[in-house]
Length: 405
Ligand SMILES: [Ca+2]
Ligand SMILES: [Ca+2]
Ligand SMILES: [Ca+2]
Image (cartoon, rainbow, N blue to C red):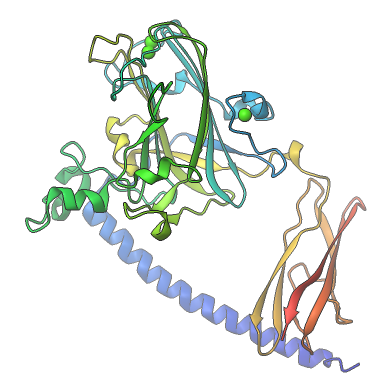
């Protein structure tokens, strides 16, 4: 067999690594310049850049792929979520009366937020008690759970309007609209485009499940969102409501439809901007509400993504992890030279201590993340064997995934 001489192979690997490093360095210099400009621009525009409530980071629970909640209004598939993920009314303040005592006989809420690796969706379970469920009217006057999401935490105002589009909030250059662009035209470009707001009706009777308060109203339709509510009371009665739903956060969601939209990529340990408002109406005949409970301490968080709270997309809880499960991915760095970079992605509670790669071409490696050059075209069976310190082992082979021409 025509194997590469070890020194040759090492040199090639080194060159690949060096050139990758150079790309990284020049990219990082470019990124630094770009970031510096961005930071400068942000400072020039606004001093309100940080997310609200810097003292708290709320947690978003990661569901394993075999325990994804079913959107049926039955909360039992959330039983595996630890109590530390729950957000109660104690985290909210009534914006109208900031010192108002919370009265669970009037309103009580519990929220849990979840996500699933590689699915760009946010799952929410909302359980609430209300002394008067106000949902007989066909308009906006309806008990409401409002959710605001900024999937890349870019911040910035996302609803045009006099309370948000002020010089103080968006900076002098953008506070005054260009006289050649109509307010309506500007709204299409701004409203809900880089962060989104949903007014979810709790419950919705003879009414769509929510108002997507965005130019892109299609975001509330399946398969971009899904919801199911359960309750057994009539308008004006007290009772308990369970709402289960998911939405998709977008870095760009325009009114022209989903084809041009860009979903926010949700990945482990990422911080996203997110907040909730519970609007409690307790009298169908009165226009005023009886509580405007906000998780962010800033009322205009309904329209300004820099005023949302930080939510962290958590890794899987240890109780849901296997002891050791070998996983890996690869990427062809150079098709012409058949250079392939392998990445160990093993999960488990046991800490991996040793790796053995069999590339399928007669060559092996004990590196964690090797770069390998294949001599010939072909489809290869590549195997990773992982061993933990305690001696536990796990194997993952991939049949003909590594294909080279
Ligand atoms: Ca369910
Ligand atoms: Ca109430
Ligand atoms: Ca109510």
